[in-house]
Length: 219
Image: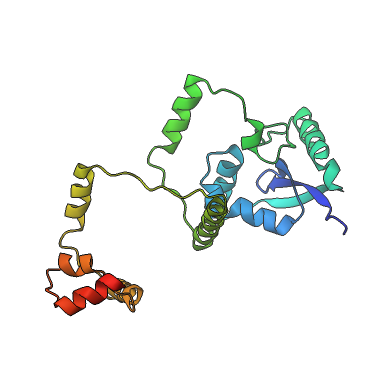
């Protein structure tokens, strides 16, 4: 089976007609959509802030395909184009020399200075995480797949261990709250057909006959 070709592309600022970002992809249309989605625009990366500025002014970058190569040559070709544009004096928003599949991977292993940690904390303070319906759905699918694999390995998810004080606080926060009709219907559907144990009957303060108690113990 033939592998798809990789496009080395540039994002052009329509205000200056100069390339501001160089990347690689096998699908130009989808890659541009990913660049401009709300989750990407809310990142603190330089390219995201530049694109966010364009979108806020009802504009968007144009895409130019610089070169199309085999997948095995994509990394070195991307680095070559980035070097060429930087040498020509273009102010690219790429944070790394390229070829590593994203800015994060290019920084792996490098230590931040105290100033970098401080600046990062300032930019993230009070920031709301962008949530989209598609993102939430994909996130849920990914988490479900992860724990399905963990269960195959015999690893079970362990929830947080609450202290008696935290349990009391959680109980007080829910006390007096009225459940919605939809919520009550879901609870009822989940419990339909399930048999109570003797302990559950006793906890509700219901007196059972001796015959009923015997039947429950045999279940």
